[in-house]
Length: 137
Image (cartoon, rainbow, N blue to C red; front, side, top):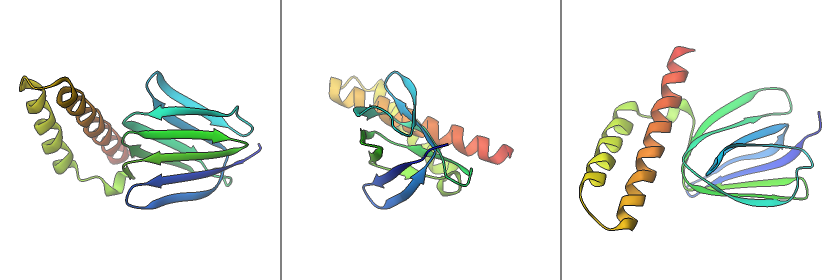
């Protein structure tokens, strides 16, 4: 299988740079898969699970917040606010953050604050889901 160059960058760190066989990214329409020689494109990333397969076959599963995906000439860039592996997720903190975001939804505030709370809930729920999967392994 052919590989492509993958760069995953978060606001606080350079998460991964190297070869990749396949990538699955959460976008507004669901999960989107990319392999080598994919057409050039730009897409919005939403909070959820990002998975990629290294050239040696190892599959990496992470949790990402909102961001952007850029595919150009067999080079893929994932730019996100945050990215975490299951080991980095603090389950109690994620539950507390999800509860706070739910409370913010109940406060009749601006549309922007409502949308922001929805995104926070989506992020925390994806973190908890990924952490739960990791605990079952």
